[in-house]
Amino acid sequence: MKYSTHNSRSIYLRFDKSVMHGQIPTYRFVIPAAVYDPFLPENKGFCNQETPRYFDSGVQPQGCLPAGMLDIGRTKSGSPPVYLSGVHFYQSPPQIYQNFTGFQHPDNSDASYLDIEPYTGVIVSAFAASQINIGMS
Image 1 (tube, rainbow, N blue to C red):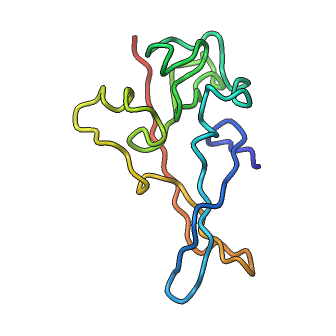
Image 2 (image 1 turned 120 degrees about the vertical axis):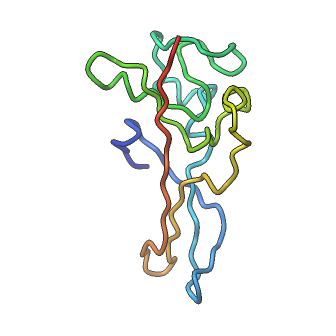
């Protein structure tokens, strides 16, 4: 587990699969969807009762954002409605990205990952991307 200043919270990675980079075998680690699931008890501490409701309770529990989204504005002066999500709302429910024209179902190409050589622990490849969203009422 690591505290991510970019996400304003702790995150962890989980083994996903083995990947070859030329002749170099690596293990791919990704951020599991559970990290951003507001319905899980371990994530309730990242909710805030002042969070505005944008979606129904089946998608957005009271005081939380929908899965795949983090409130990064409340850590800033004035608490602006600024939310971090995966690219194309990766790991968010369909009700989120279906509200935007041109958005397709996100796929694994939008996932952040680390490819680590298993014997030395050297990072051979990495990809991290996120999307900044502004809440509007």
